[in-house]
Length: 124
Image (cartoon, rainbow, N blue to C red; front, side):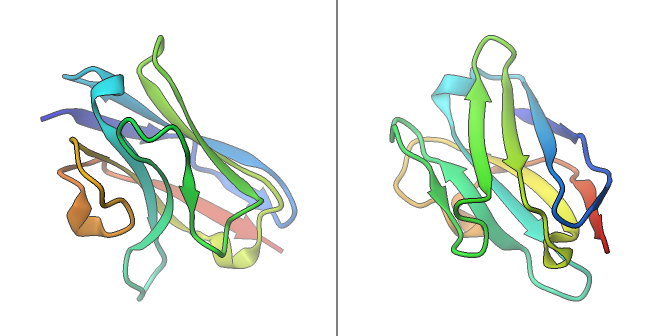
């Protein structure tokens, strides 16, 4: 099982940008599908973005489409979530997740490995 370590969470002003990272160890990044989820206080963990294994395209939640971009850097074994035009409602702990071959990507149960999360707080 791969190990995932998120970083880059911070306090950012509404309308600003932030990039969070997920450093992968114990596996080859190209052998997995990747997802970002988030969880706000008192709410369920929700899907944000995904790069399914061998898919060649990214998928996004409606709430972030056009503002967030998921990408991976195979040389650095890192998965990124670039966030622009941040809103107060984007405040949450952001989690990176990995899964092997398969078609699902938007449910937490689609993923086998999770990081510990990184806090993103959007301030007014």
